Image (cartoon, rainbow, N blue to C red; front, side, top):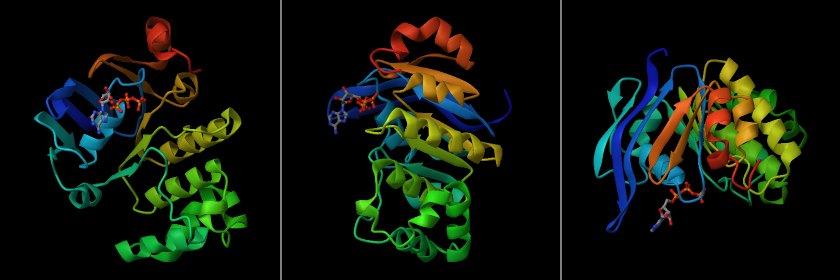
Length: 235
Ligand code: ATP
């Protein structure tokens, strides 16, 4: 494994008195796509929240590009190169596609660059640039959410449940684009219930259960040894 872009060491977090991350260890190599799999309630979304600065860790460390960022503010994480596409997407429904994208220019990214990146990866957004985001399909909204994340030129993209509520064909299409994004040099951690789809484009995979990473390795190996855990109900 090359030097990790993200290294999580013995990370703990709790809701009230209930500890839900119970010593998570995880390393995402620079330039790699890693799938983070596991059953409902394993702690995947909580891990995303802690890594992305939305929830405090109670113990452990998080290194991003070699910098210790445990409990860093989201704006500091963004500056270092972390960008998150949260579960359930996050577009402004009453703004057009183009307005959703050019809003990023307030964060100092030139509007033309944001639009060019978005329309290169997702030509469908170009066709729909004047449409209100809230009237687009779930898959198209996910494309928009991903485009906004890409606007900040991230070193590490955190994708939380890209597939949520979407038809398998669209999910496949989105993951094809994930592979293209990765080939441009962005490291990607994708949290996913559809194990097979995520593993298709991943270099590595990790499996969470009960608030810990219980297995990690190459996709074939994980599919072979952990299929009972990762295929529970979802393909
Ligand atoms: P899913 O795929 O169902 O979202 P997950 O692996 O992402 O599952 P989390 O959402 O991180 O798991 O949940 C881990 C545990 O923490 C679960 O037992 C869940 O009920 C609990 N939990 C999550 N959010 C909260 C919250 N805001 N308050 C209290 N408990 C929570």
